[in-house]
Length: 475
Ligand code: SAH
Ligand code: SF4
Ligand code: F3S
Image (tube, rainbow, N blue to C red):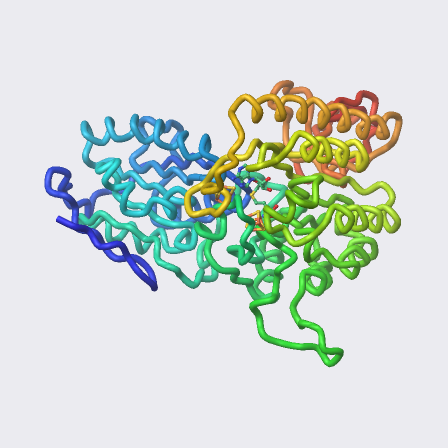
């Protein structure tokens, strides 16, 4: 029997392969759910929305992955090790499903999109395979599952505005998607093929969501997009001055005054599209935090070109200089890849030099991993595992050294911390972040003995600095 892969729009039910035909679950009482999330903030945001949908359907949050009635893996395929992880998780659940056919097994996210129907062949116990564009349709898809179908939803899909309230992990900080997908074609990256074309949400919808979050007590919003600088380029409208009407800068102005929201962040920025107007807006708008996440990927122009990133090291440098002119204390973080195909030792050293020169507060590092349907994966000049491991090790040591140097500037300073919760390693402490995004720990009681609550803004004198976190006491 051949199952047909769904095409736009939405999902096509796939007939269940014979030996795995399952009992219809229509009418069965809904029990507990468990979601494990891999990957980036977009996936975390999607998981929170899917959890909201499940709860609206009558599922309740379970406490154990191995006894939940519905298990959902929201997967990531950015590197091979991320993809492999989910298969080992699925093996255990598939065994459980064979003993308990009423278990509902869902694979969502980027591996689901990449593998589609072939995931069903690999793990026939699956009930639902759904790409990221379908996250807001989980209820509709599960309704098909409940009728006894195996469902694959990987067609290109116009993302629906959220109708359900997301179940957020934090009570204080929330993610708000502003643009889905990515139209870039970085030669190493799987994201455009799994997340689809760019789709910007309307500013009104974004503001409405933020107002709702503020009313529920959230204090910090991170606006999300894989290439957030592309926000609005798929929306119509030109200003009288001949500019695009919808840009990230305009969006920041539009949402800035939502009452109750104290801090606004955004990620991820792309050096190719990052504008001076945006830097000015960040400097002028008091709620926009002094933290910029701007991946540079490589410190060598030829490698950047092979990656099809569309900027030079010099352009990157000028962006950082401009940010530091306008916002001297700004924290800068980035992503970088080493051992890209053909990267010479000298080219790799230029990446180290740039890290040395800029002085990043934090850098996410990775060794290049060939991905399906990406040009660089087919290039002959792949580097060996040994080179990858060695470069990554040296790079990480430098990143930590520079982060430590950057942390030193906080010693003795008073920083405003937005409290997020209790320090999981010390119940007497609370934790939160500086505006520049450094994690900070401090005692959880005021001098009068009352407990400090999540959502409070506290002034903390920093007494201890570490590479990636700080500790202090109330100022
Ligand atoms: N949209 C963002 C980041 C997307 S993915 C950007 O444009 O920078 C997050 C990070 O994963 C990337 O910044 C990159 O550093 C890393 N990454 C992506 N594909 C990779 C691959 N094939 N191998 C190793 N790292 C990769
Ligand atoms: Fe991937 Fe490049 Fe898009 Fe970032 S901008 S998600 S690295 S294709
Ligand atoms: Fe991973 Fe998909 Fe995000 S591949 S990094 S979860 S966009």
